[in-house]
Amino acid sequence: MGEARNRNGYVDGYWWSNDGLRLHYRDYAGRQDRPPVICFPGLTRNARDYEGLAERLAGEWRVILIEFRGRGESAYAKDPMTYVPLTYLQDVEALIAELKIERFVAVGTSLGGIVTMLIAATDRERLAGAVLNDVGPEIDPGGLARIRTYVGKAVQHPTWMHAARALGEANADVYPGYGIEDWLRMAKRLFRLNSSGRIVLDYDMKIAEPFRVPGNEAGPDMWPTIDALKGKPLLVVRGALSDILRAPVAEKMIERVPGAVLVTVPDVGHAPTLDEPEVVTAIDKLLAKVAKAAKIPA
Image 1 (cartoon, rainbow, N blue to C red):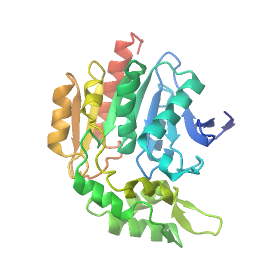
Image 2 (cartoon, rainbow, N blue to C red; image 1 turned 90 degrees about the vertical axis):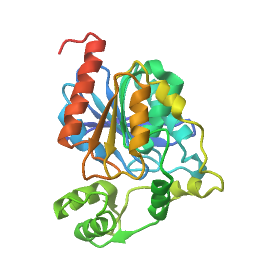
Image 3 (spheres, one colour; image 1 turned 135 degrees about the vertical axis):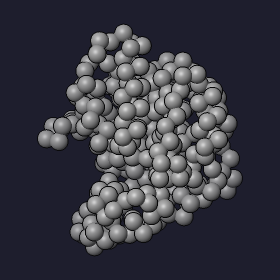
């Protein structure tokens, strides 16, 4: 693992996967007497998705933003069939062992939430709390079909403004309240500038290959992973317009975990950014529960 200082408030860290990939994370410093907050991004996303959350919590909480293999500054996999949740779980386990982290709060958006649920099922005592952002043990087939229409399709733009406008046209129903500045901010998170001066998506297009395997739609029953979160502070965030996490599934999740909280963000689809005021308040309350359960002074 190597580290390089960064003037933006975090350290760039690297670790090695079991199959020899150099993977990247951002590490924002915080209180050492509190469990760190580890954030897992969505399918095509990277550490930049969590910049707002990390900058807000840093100092009080150590925040680690990981980039799954094939995204951001993490290496691309030689075998595209390793772009699956169980491999991401193994990569996360390698990082936790490297950093000697005993307990942590997991924040997972979409795919990152699936990895969080797998951690609950396999190593629940390590979780001090969890935030599941617009994902649950049942994924709506319609939303999955929509994701298949765009994931793994290479696009490029001549300028950031072109990228922002294209995002706005393609996702107007997901974030109907967004203006051009919002789309530009999202473009800076989703895309990167390549060596040819073009704006391109910041992930390996081959992450889509596991989706193309016949019969891959039917995964394991994930409801036991929700049951594994009983006794843990749990926040479920749902976009009111989401086509991934339907309201009945979110409500059932809350029913199965006593004390869990559901926050529905109005006029947002898949997925909320976690910067919304109601989500900020809910995350602060969850972290207060974590600190109280660990008997840590405020």
